[in-house]
Length: 248
Image 1 (tube, rainbow, N blue to C red):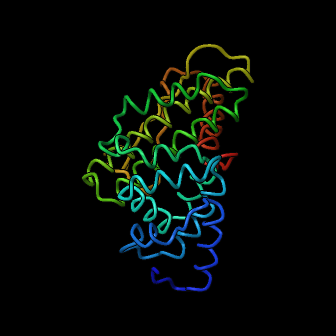
Image 2 (image 1 turned 135 degrees about the vertical axis):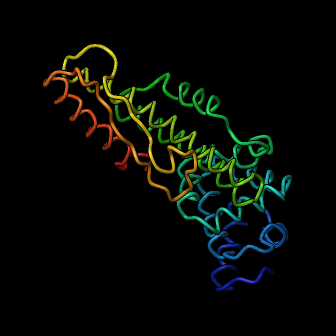
């Protein structure tokens, strides 16, 4: 049996996993937990994920078929409760985690843009549209994190992928927030504010803990009314990008 920090608690967790999947989990977990610095946390988060899955037996079979990807998954679950929460909230992302093609190369800016555009094709409200963008952020971040923890991509590819994701989320949020703002205030036309990235995002060097430094630019010829609307819009945009919502 794998060496756990709390063997008795781990044995209880393994027993619950066995009941969920109708499999003896120890053989597989002994394999895919090799070298994992946080095995107790990893199996606890694995249990949460399996409970959320529509068909946990199929998910478990996928782990058995792809033990190398399973090892990456357990690395993520041992390293980050936040990323584990993403999987628990969105069990459908199992296919993303266990698909070698998703991890074979970093996503391009164009690919992330297409994903975001498709995600925003159907939404029922302003908050729903923002939640759709958060889902895009979650699934792309998960993909990048797994590849990073597994050492599958060069560091520069990780930074560029995170920066491309931020670029897309910010640009799409500008569209969503401006559409909502001009509807609320009976305005017309495209957004008058340009958003410029400074710092690590401006240099395409974001890491997982980076803040994004944004500067808002307005044409010098804007009148007082447009200036006031632009300031209020920028506050609304900042709130949209930073507030917690249904998907965190």
